[in-house]
Image 1 (cartoon, rainbow, N blue to C red):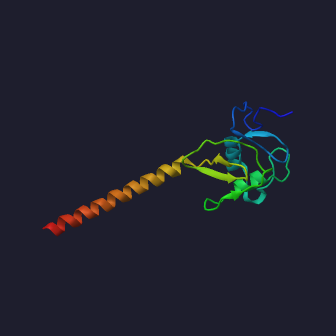
Image 2 (spheres, rainbow, N blue to C red; image 1 turned 90 degrees about the horizontal axis):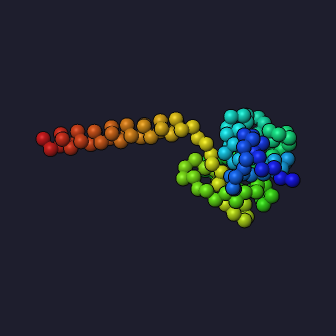
Image 3 (tube, rainbow, N blue to C red; image 1 turned 135 degrees about the vertical axis):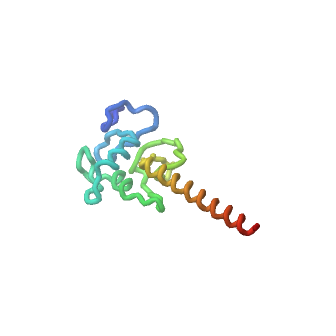
Length: 138
């Protein structure tokens, strides 16, 4: 019998926002799994399931995800039909039947810091260009 409750947050799973852990067949929200991995997994022990302590390909793939690579999973690695597209901050997993998007939580403070630095740089460059044009015209 399949549980309709996320084993991490204990809330009901509604729609296609879940995946089933391959090792122990427990349901988890994709966002809960990502949050749990971000907070609890160390580099030394990346493949162990937090419930049954068995090797888990899904957890290992998410932890070892490299933004420049696409993770390829076999058909039995993950079951989910989530087609919600998060424009930013996502891990994209492929299997042979469909593309699965798992939201990848990035610290928003770093994003805002990046945007702030980019804005300051653009203001600086614009100011320099204005000064150059001003001095050239005189």
